Length: 241
Image 1: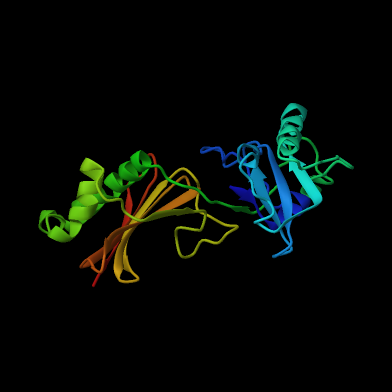
Image 2: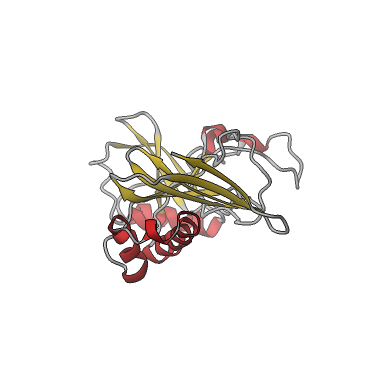
């Protein structure tokens, strides 16, 4: 996960994640930012990637290096890794997070983030199982026993050929925006036809949105979406095609 452009000099800093309950950013990973001579933009390399880094092939400049870390000890560790691969670094000044200027301790700040990640197979299969059961509940046995569902079924049960998936922080509902969402204590689920495929989407606490291509070159007769909030009856909507 990286901070968005509104983070000033800290734009592009890779953080270790977001607190799943509060939505607060966790600490940044130890990293160095290189200026790409090809794009003119900074690109992040975390400490563990430095040893195998072929910076010349990536068209990285050694001018204007930026090092970020959550502590002085880890900052020094990044510099040590750079030295091992022959990249000198001298800290000339402290980088200040401009988005905190004028703020007091304890104040909250809203900044954009870009989420990128790789889902491991156990997590993908668990989330897909939730979507599969949700679809079976609303579409029924006749639909779910069709051969078209076998790839998803076999991936869930036997870890066979994987299903395409992606993660993002985009809004789930159409009337939400990047800066306004529904309350964050719910789980949202949707199964719909999109781009010639059946897409299943699940979102927890209005944070991450997980999308799965459940079936390719297929369509379901009824699209369904639901919102589950603790202590309330589920809100369910259908679109019959």
